[in-house]
Amino acid sequence: MQPDNPAEHFTDTEVPAELRPLFPAALRRAYSAADITMERDDYLATPGAKYQRGDLIMLAASYEFEQLLKRGLLPGFDGTWEFFAKPTGKHFVMLTSRARITLNQVQDPRKKPRRAVFRNNYAELNEAGLFDSFDDELKRAREEAERDGARRLLHILHGYHDLDFAHIAYPHPERNRHIYRSRNLMQLPHEVSSDLPAPEGPSESPNPEAFENFERHLKDDE
Image 1 (cartoon, one colour):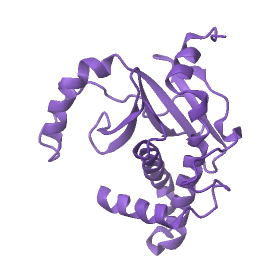
Image 2 (cartoon, one colour):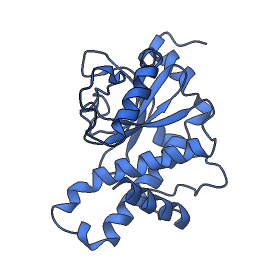
Image 3 (tube, one colour):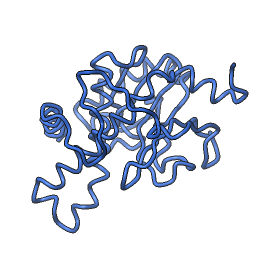
């Protein structure tokens, strides 16, 4: 039976239920990789560095979801790295035919992320030349602006200090809330493919090869 809430129906169509158990497993590996990095590297043991854990989790989560796409575990999904509204860095965006899906670490899943405004039309940006790759990305984005503008925004919300929750949310366009928010995905059975490590919890060590790949990903991002 189709849900009465059109936003719920849209979310269910773009992110089918059979794919969702992959999400909590990927997030557990991301939180674990970030914690291992914090514990292993002395320069992250300073009082100031502990506040960078959230950034490491963001990078690790982006890496894990990018790996799901590369392994073909999310059919119908594509992925791209896009600049924030202010091009101080990039964030990973997953694309379906009708949706743009972003990863967001939040304290309160009932509210929209602080950086909920992700620009999907680069035609008005005036920072050309600020980054080496920006001119090419600007040209590509202009060509895709019309198509991307038709996509609706979905958030994968997770957090916070501990991985207590994960939701797929359809944000309200004006108010600081969601039109629809899924059940807590962390309560789903974590069914993963055989080539991915089973999720035992945020403190469990990830697969060594996956951890090395994440480390290389961090270095490439510098």
